[in-house]
Length: 117
Image (cartoon, rainbow, N blue to C red; front, side):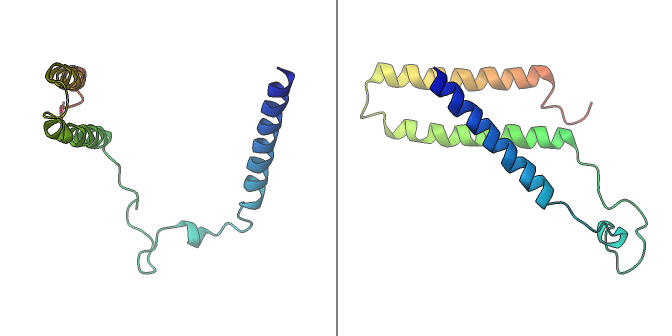
């Protein structure tokens, strides 16, 4: 038990030292106003260069990505129908689709699929 605590402490200590060294060595010594401002052909920018990002768009893109990956997991199900037991194939496919539908219903009930309010 003492060995595990010692190894954990050493790991924590090494991680802290590495983070401290990286923060000290990565500091910029010269902060220049021109380098930190956005470049617009030598003129001062007329408006902010950073556009506000829609969090709603990000959530819908994330949901799309999750369902896209789950669809790729569903594609091989049809090809293994002849290889596996019919009951286990139906049960597994049904449970997978049920979890997908429950997740979709939860997202819908929380309003994550509404583009505008």
